[in-house]
Length: 304
Image 1 (cartoon, rainbow, N blue to C red):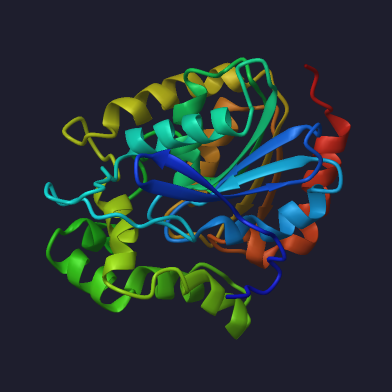
Image 2: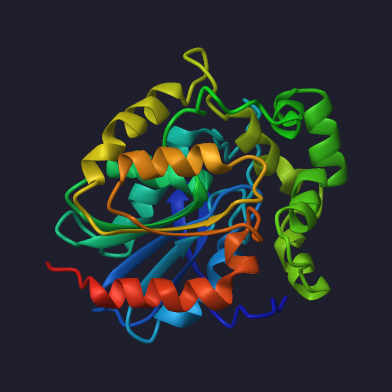
């Protein structure tokens, strides 16, 4: 299937026995590495315009997390074979394995670009690789627990309900389809919206969109909580590195409360926040953000 604005040839990598990840590895092999991490319910398609805007010079590595995009979508039932555990820890381990496979070792400096759950995955990985992370590109995401002043969005609470959420999200693709409308302020072209939802075309293929929501860490009883809490504690240690923040202020989940959390932790960050952009800020503001991010990277060359 052809996806508009996505002229890339995805690669495959066996992240675990019998489970393959799809990923992009675009740009010169010896170029500065930019690792771009998507969230839920999107996939590497979210980053397509930034990849196109950087890959003449930069090496862009962009995975589809297991269960997402063009990656395999294994079951998580105890009897499944192969079986996948849809947890934040698994995501971090997958990223570790992918980068090793791509030859990005501990001595390779990287720019970490994140969106949505990609922030928790990326900063979870960075806990053991802080020295590699030389700069940051942050778009509508989190790397710390939900701010106390932030009320729980009802859509997230619904998704975490193991009966109602499973039925609505897996049965009707409500999350992916809804996000393609509600995640933007500028209406997506129909073919772009179809590309966002195409990987999630059946009950089986929507497993990750619901498991991501059920794994959201809201307190110490949640499995992902220790990793998220550790990432939040470590975030201010990145304040000495160049950081670019692009933020859509109409995001009903990752809103001003989260933006202020990043501003507080990274006070020197270059920030572009948009009153007329939503969660998929690179959809609403690619024309502004892609050249701005390119200029930011060009101005801060990585050193080996």
